[in-house]
Amino acid sequence: MPTAVEVKENGADIGEINRLLVEKVEELTLYVLLLEERMKALEDN
Image 1 (cartoon, rainbow, N blue to C red):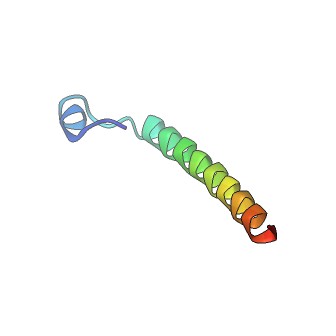
Image 2 (image 1 turned 60 degrees about the horizontal axis):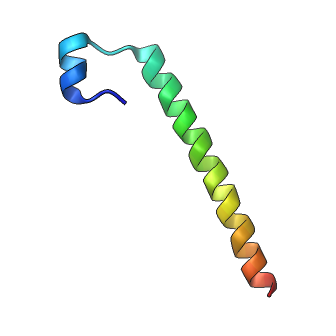
Image 3 (image 1 turned 90 degrees about the vertical axis):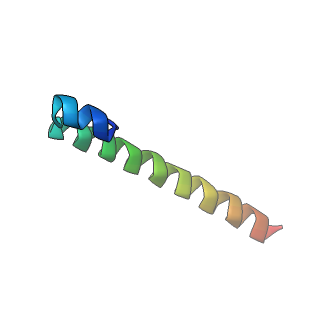
């Protein structure tokens, strides 16, 4: 993600920012799914 200074100096590439946000949402979704699997495994023991 660009910093506030970078956006001020160069403007904001909304398409690139949107792509980065979608990528982060995907990463966090996969992380939540992994945590759910780990919790289930612990609960089953």
